[in-house]
Length: 357
Ligand code: ATP
Image 1 (cartoon, rainbow, N blue to C red):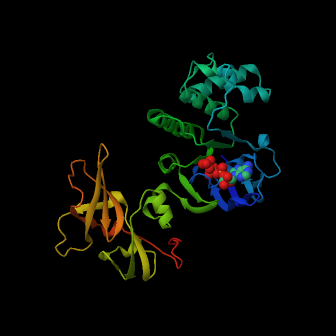
Image 2 (spheres, rainbow, N blue to C red):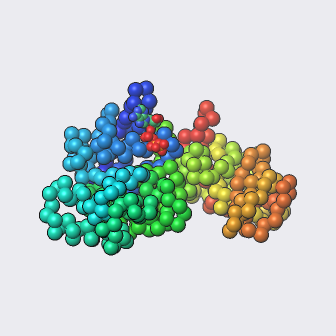
Image 3 (cartoon, rainbow, N blue to C red):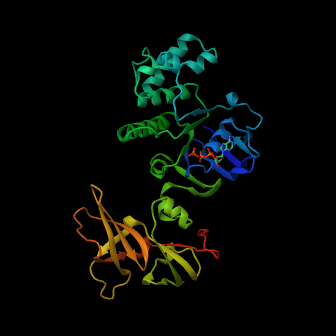
């Protein structure tokens, strides 16, 4: 299993800084997601790891050894592209065994390993079919088998679940999980979808505009986002400014009691946030702490729950409600915030958010 380190990695395309001083470590056997909006530098990073793009500065190290002078085919990193790029008229077995034929591996061994790989991607018995006869989802599995057959040190996946319908996404996600468990391979994948990142990855590297914003376990992005932008990217638009004094924060919507164990910020100006799924709809405040009235702006039916958009001290907040919650537009609801669910963000001097730690 291979340890991957990106060390002050940067890439410029003329005036465009695609990747800016990126530093992170992927532990042996770990699966890491490179997550971020379109154009943030994810694919450029993946391609630098694969050796398809040369960095402007910085280094890519596998097990402590610089890969900069090592050509793509010798790095032991294989990339599975979003478009599967199979040879359409070649048989499936021919496609899967392609890398081994290039290495002049004896035919009997190729046949054995192809069968093994088709078993691994849950497509035994399709070896003699032509690649173009398979469905998109099946072709994606074959592309994965073709990458894995050469026993790479590092597996690089470009948007592995994109272009798949909902059922196939679940199937492919489970397959990637199984493959990882069975091969233990260090894997890095690119996605712009935060759900895909948290479903598959052990750790997530979130990038905005070429810069690493936060790197950690999936839950940390929900529980401890380091900036308002990060909270928003993880579908939490709820924030309100306040001033912290001990375990209390005074805001335009009233006073909140917070859990000091979760408050990493010093006294003074802060910004409170709480995730939509952590907000409760409670009975009238009657002087109880952390109960705030809000006006319903819309109540959207989502099948298994409802999404309420409310106005709280002039800002739009989102929360979830049971499917039978019948609150109408303009109605007042009382929101309840458990102190241990409140997280504090730091608004910086020029109004941009810089994060907590
Ligand atoms: P997407 O999700 O849309 O693929 P991304 O996060 O993978 O986006 P990159 O493809 O890495 O982003 O691009 C990062 C930035 O670098 C973008 O501004 C892009 O326009 C620019 N860029 C990428 N490749 C080149 C290139 N070959 N020449 C010039 N600019 C490039």
